Image 1 (tube, rainbow, N blue to C red):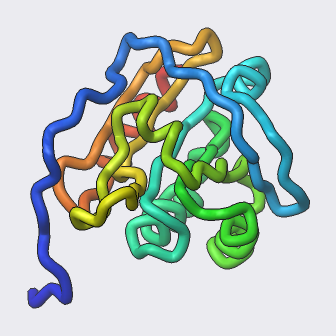
Image 2: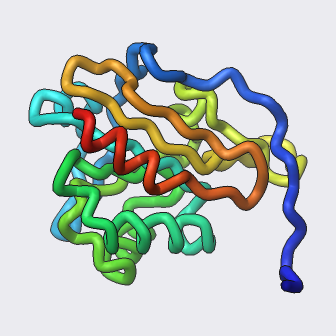
Length: 171
């Protein structure tokens, strides 16, 4: 099969792993109706969270990941929350286009501070000061412990959805 892009190995990263305490943060959380500043700890008070880091809305990895998670109904096991550099306005469009209104929402992290805290920031194609989120997923239990972590090792790369669902089933 001929690809329209090159598969690229990503540099090693010192990211959050299973058993670590998930770094807390506060950012605008966008849902299908509005957005407001929300912290991860606020969400954890309501149950476990699946954090889904994607590069930016509209990029094909985000499209495929959100479609797969939607189709598998993973939000039945945890609050599904996306995180990317995209603005709240872009998130509103993505929520509508991907049919993920039932997900908890998408965090806007334009300066990639959350990605840095989780060790999944990616310098975009060597451009000075331009960062994005490395595709990754983290299942965070109500007590803030990371129960499952997957981080892309190449571009593009996608989570093992069966493993991810297994981790969610174990909550």
